[in-house]
Image 1 (cartoon, rainbow, N blue to C red):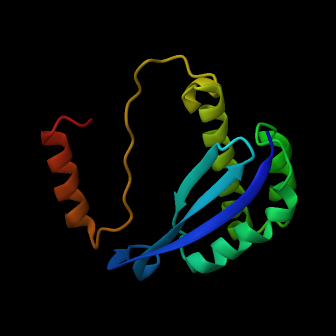
Image 2 (image 1 turned 135 degrees about the horizontal axis):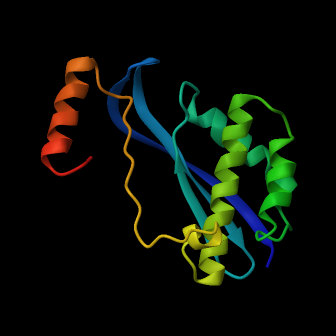
Length: 153
């Protein structure tokens, strides 16, 4: 199996939110799609914290020459090639997006959930949730109380 193409589609929801440690931003991001010659496609959605999503998308596309023609199951090799392009925060995000699409391809190719590919042994795990978009501590307390009442611990 070989990687044949990488595409990035930007998404703008038209909505705004308050990111407590960056200020107000529009909710923007994108979808990364990595294609193979066997018709298997790896996907991930992303948002870029504090960076324009277009910049992250362009950096992902700039990494295409490092991965086109590669076997997508050579995840570590591709990670090393993309990660070492530069070591800035945003390029690590771009390499991480590509890396995640490769795990998606591997799971689809082997008909296994990714947690099994990573050595997972539990049938159930506790969920983890996080948000950075609430405006103040009172909003976080209200959310925490609501989640507790619904059974989250």
